Length: 406
Image 1 (cartoon, helix red, strand yellow):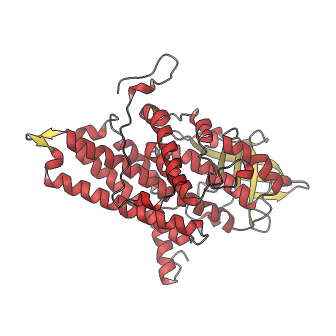
Image 2: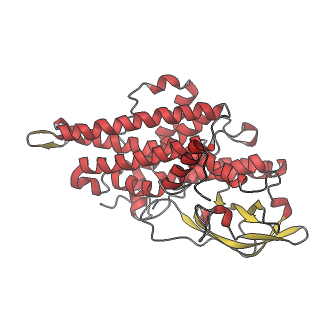
C-alpha cells in the first residue's frame, strides 16, 4: 500500500473513501426508535470520517490510533447505557448495541477500545462501586479523560478465571496486591485498571488500581496478527499497595467479573455483525463492478449463492440481537442467551469474511479492501470474552441442566 501519510505521521484522511451502505433485508429499522436511528447515524458518520480513512494504515503498522480515545468519548461511546448523572449517555441497551455495531463495522479494535472502557471498567464501578468511586471515576471515563482496562485473564487462567492466583493481603488501611494479568486491552495506556484478585479467604474481590502506584507495570504485547490497531498488554503487580477505599465494596465472588463479561459479550454480539456487514457490503459492490468472462461476477450463480447466504446470516443475527436487546431493556436477558448471541454473531461474521475474501479474489488479501483486516480481527473476537466452544457449552448446560465444566 502506498503511504498516504505526511512527514509528521498524520494520515491524509481523504486518501480512503468509505462507501458503506447499511443492509436491512427484513426492515428491522422499523423496530427501532428515532433515538436508536439517530445514535446509529451519528456513530456511522464519525466512523466514516475518523476511522475508515486511517484504519488500514494503523493496522498495517500495528499501531493504535490513540487520538481516537477522546473522539469516542465525544460521541458518547463509553458507557452509553449508564446513567446520565455520572456523565454517561442514559440510553437503552439497544442503543448501546447499535453503537458497538457501527464501531466494529469500522474495526474490531476500535470497538474494543470502547467496549472495554464502558462494559468492563465503567460498568463494574457503577454496579459494584461506592458512590464516591462513581463520582470520582465515571465522568472522566465517560469523556475519555481517563482510560481504563479490565484485569481478569491470567497467563495460566483464561477460560477458568476462578483458578486465578493474583491475590491481595490485608495491610491495615490497604491491601498488598501481587500477581499478573494477560491479554489486557488498553493496558499500556490505561490510567486505571479494574482488577480481580483473591483475598486471604479465597474470595474474589474487585479493586481499582491506578497508574503510578508503586510496583504496578503494564508491558505491551507485540507481534499480534489480529486486532493490530488495538493496544494490548499485561498487568503486573509486585507488592502494589492499594488503598481499601479503592476496593469495590458491593460484590464478592466470581459473579462480579462474570456479570461484567455478560455486559461486554452483549456488545460483541452486536459488534461482530458490523464487521460482517462491512465485508458483505464490500463483496456485493465488488461483485457488481468486477467483470470476468464478459459480465459482472455477481451474475454468476456461485457468487450469488455466497452473497445470498451472507445476507441471510446477517439478517438472522440482526433479529437475534434485536430480541436480545429488548430482553436486556426489560432486565430479562440471561447470561446464556447472551452467550448464544455472542457465539452466533462471531461465527457468522468470520464465515462471511472468508466468503467475501473469495469474492474479492486476489484483491481480497490486500489492504485496498477491509476483508483480511476484519478476518484477522474476528479470529480474536471469536475467542475473547469466552471462546466459541465455551459459549457452546454454556448453551449446552442451559438446555440440559448438566455442567460440562466439572
